[in-house]
Each structure stands twice: as structure tokens, then as C-alpha cells.
Length: 489
Image 1 (cartoon, rainbow, N blue to C red):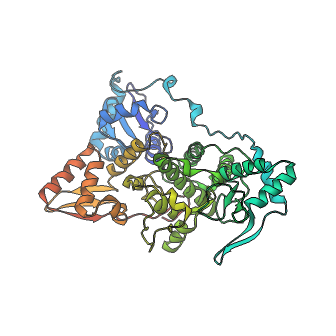
Image 2: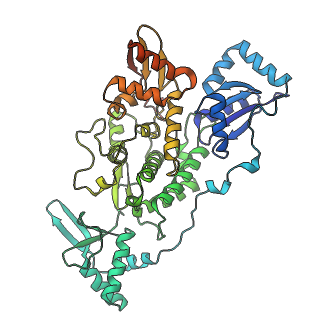
Image 3: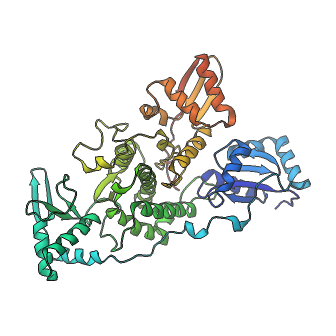
């Protein structure tokens, strides 16, 4: 280990592959570093952006000398003269105390806020559901030629059953039936019905997914399900912790096999089953956006840990179409979440029709307006996907902007080759979902210039090219290789 008079400071976030890689490189070269995790010291992020002009992480300093991110660190190491000056500075010179913000540990956000609440408040209604499930009341019901339910009963039948079982009256039976619908223990068979009705012609069915292919199928925990936003918050914290605990020391691979056998993964699966009764329709637009981005990323990790990563284009198509969760009593595949909900029920890349039909109750969950920045928040498990991040309803717009700027700062997402004409190399994400960014190539470039951030000169270079009118777009190849250990190279 080098003896230093100065210091090396790395500003990072948990689970960031480039941060992990940079810290490993420093360790391998015997260079001790001070790690400032921005997720525990969020106030430092504003200062860092003002100081560096960067929104991505890591950002590395040798004393007061700003090195940059992981790529910049690797380039500096390959330049013997530059690397020698950096090492000489930290070995010979003390750091100026006021040059960098290094917060005291006592200033960190409460560590407990990053812990998932796994306590379970027993829901008294769960006992009613168990009695209902064991009774002879649920029966086969076919409302149409193309649909049926084997656990159905009319509202009137339920009220009569509850009266006899509990020796009570109609009013109490309707009240309990309404609570069961509210908490999604039972679901209306007719999608046009919203409430519980004491009616012989209005049918309901148990929210049962024991035989489903959904990854969170099975009997859900008999817990009081918090509001969907709180449940998503717990899920995002737990999946981020799993990801961080099982990423390789160089930040390049995830050990999904080890993750699958961990206690944390068992906790995650139990928590994911509670999604079956999540009332996502109660979330506002920002809440839904954060909820479904987090659930999408968690579902990808869950599926990869359970079944492995897709290995070719055919298995990849099946992966996005068939990998699903039960959310609020309805199935949502990865395609349903991305295109049906987050993209306002738009056709996907290889889809002929929007995911949700007019009578599909999931269409009511779709976002009203498409936010193109979601494409830099969703991680599908491929190497070219944006890094894993998690999002909160309260700060979703700021967090999406940060994710977008951070991704576009990377050369594998946006690279500008000045000349006659200027060649603008863009991530293939902006080609596949071009309609979300603009109606013409010029509109897409103007959107990119507005959202790339002002660091590194990319925004200015784009604006200059657009002003000259001499430019062309080239789309960068997308690396579909898996980020799992043992995945395809």
C-alpha cells in the first residue's frame, strides 16, 4: 500500500458497476481511497455536479486534481507521464482541507432507512379468505365463451355464506365483501365492476395464482399490504442490496447463483408475492412511474436469478413477453410494464398491437404521457443496458434526469465525431424507441442536446452540428451479452 501525504477521494453510489471497478483498480495498485457514497450523503451530489459538471459516478480526485470517472482513471493509468504526476502529487503533497467535500459519518442519512421493513402485520381478513377458500362457495363460472373462473361466486352468494358462517346480517356481509374487493383478496369477474354488490348476477373470484407461471405466484403472505408506493420502496431497497452484495469485485458481473441461495433473496420473494394485492390504481402518475420502473428492474433480476439470462434473440423475445409478476390481481409481463404502462400503451419494438385492449382493466393503469427518460432507467440485464438504479415517487423527475444525463455522458451511449459532416453516434435505444424522443431525426438530436447535460462539451457539439445542418446519425451496436457470471461473452 502506498504511503500518502495526500488523498484519493471517490464519489460513488451503491451497486454502481463503474464505481466498484474504479475502487478495485485503486486497491489493486495499492492506492488507499476515501469513498463518499452519494446515496448516504445526497447533499454532496449538488456540490459535486457544480464542481465537476458531471452527473455520473464515480468521480475521482487525486488531492485537488480532478481525474473523472472509471474510464478516465484507466486512461490516466495508460499515460505514464500523467499517471506519474498524479502519484507524485498524493505521495508528496498534503491535500487542501477545503478543496473537496468529505462529510462526517454522522451526516449520513439514517442507515436504517436503507433497511427493508419485513415485519408483517396480520390481516384479519386473511382468515375470512381461508374460510372462503375451504368452503363449497367458490364454483366454476363461465361469463363468456372465451373466459371462465373456477373460484367464482356472486355477491349475493357471498353475503348469504358470510351471514350463515358468522351469524350476522346483510349489512355486515356487504361491508366485509367491500373490504375484500378493496384489498384485492377477491376480484370482480366483469372488468366494468369496481365495487362489491349484493347482486346474484355480479360475480367475483378469489385472487388465486397458485398455478401461475408468474414469478411471484403462490399464496401471498397474510399481511396487511401497505400502500403500493411503500411496498415498491421496500422492494427497491431490498433488490438494490441484493445486487450490491452479489456484484463482482470488478463491477462487471453479477453472481445470480449466489444471490438465489441467499436469505435476502428468500425475503425478496416473500415480499414480491405481496404485489398480488397492490392497489397500483391509487398511485398518482409519478408514483406509478417510480413503482413500475423499480418493479421492472427487480423482475429482471428475479428472473435471471431463477432461470438464467436469455442466450439468443428467440429466448430474449420470450423473456420479455413471458417473464411476469401478478400486480393488483393482474398479470404484467416485462413488455406489459414497459410498453403497456410506462409508454402509455404503445406498441413495442416487435409488437403489432399495443399490449392492452380497450376492455383490458390494465389500460387504466397506463401513464397518460410517455416520459422518454424511462429508457435510461430500465435495465434488462444486458451489458449495454443503463446501470441499475432505483427511484422514489417523491423525486422521480430529478432522479430520471440524473439517470439520463449520466447515461448520455458515456461514450457507449453518445459519441460525437466532428467533421464534414459531424457523425453523431447514438445508443440504439434512441432508434428502437425513436417516436418517444421526436418525430424526426433532428427532433431526436435536439432532445438529446437538451438532456445530455452541459459537461464534457457534448451538448455544445450537438448544438453546433445542428446549427450547421451538416450532420448524420450512426447508431451504436447494442451488447446483448449477459451481465451474469458465466453469461455469454
